[in-house]
Image (tube, rainbow, N blue to C red):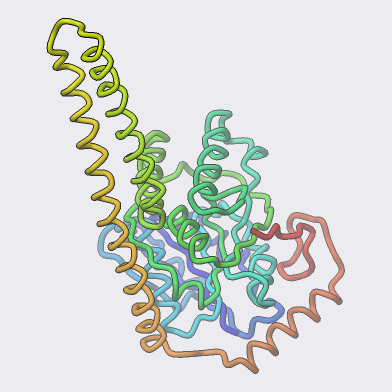
Length: 355
């Protein structure tokens, strides 16, 4: 099995050496480990530093394209070069790369399609109380939209199996984290969560200029994905609310008319007619959204097959079974450790929570 560890970078010459130094060089069940640096328009010496430290795989953007595009292009490169498992980490050394062995283990064993690290945000010292609360609320919203139960939906420290990546399609331009969870949840993929302890903060986030911008963009991505997969829930609810809004003024008009109250009561008629039009439009949009959803499902199935043709197959069933057998044997014989910095793959102190 071949593992690609991809690192999206934007001017990370100072922290990238820390990331590269802590990536394990051997993992039970993994035959090859490759490191991929996605240079998202860096203007410093990020690429030079990576080359000097032995990185051989690069994806270059001539200008800053954003995290979602960097993730998508990195995955495309990894799949084209035979990746069976892809781990995404960050160039700011936020995540404990020593835990990559634990992160990929459920994927290698065939127990999960995606494993997401739980940063345990409530324990992160540099997170303000407001940020901790918003992280919890955001995860709850994503879990509601995806039908999952993940404690840290915004975590970017993840492991993906090759079949999962062939089925996922990132269309947002902001961040892939929320969208991939919602897609994976609705496509019935197996997702696990692995508690980790993050490294000390090295810099401010470059993904957004303010917390409120992050909330707005994340909300937009979640809403779009939710409507894409559950149009009936959205538009039937809107239609019923508008219909109820039409029933009230029309009922009032009927009562006034029956009791002979003076006046034309045009306000009730206008309000009721407007609400009724809103209800009809909601149900019309439901039909269109359902057709779009059906079309998307068919297109994604076609795209998945095209990806299989384009990228080909790498690990055969026998080789995959052998890798899982080696990983399982290593897990049984390894001594468990609770130290946060234990070597990757040397036993799990935290049991991943299945979703």
